[in-house]
Image (cartoon, rainbow, N blue to C red; front, top):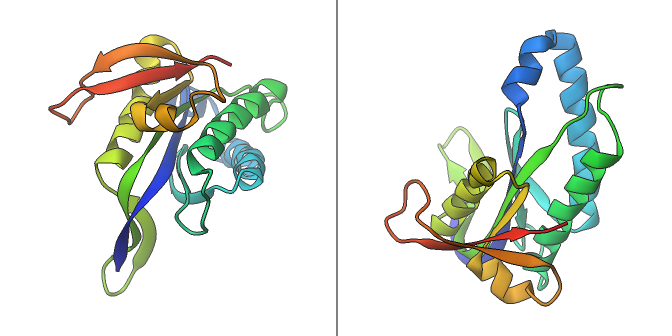
Length: 184
């Protein structure tokens, strides 16, 4: 059963993954992904995040879900910055450079086990989660790598260099979202 909780989520996705995977055989692709996920896990663990889901090359990372974290919004931002730094500082599987797009949002969401009687998965659901996913995708349109929603920015604007992008109606929502990009 789930519970409503204010938390932060970070969606990530490797830029150009389909093109990259098209050029690699299955063994090399697995090596690259395992190398990448290992490096990203170190960053995520450093700032108290939990990887709630892997979907292909994408990750859903949560803060203040599995373990209490009063600084969850800032830790989500710190994780996104750390992911960017890790990607800039190394190649994966020996010689494959990767870039990662991140979408961050904070708000009330359903946190807990969801699924069938035979298989349950600990995850998060709700509008704030959907917004984070859309922000990650919106990076492609703006040529950016870290976008955040208004709730996240309100909590930690004094700590990070956010720039207002505008009021955007993201896919799947009828009301607009205040969108910010993090300049790092």
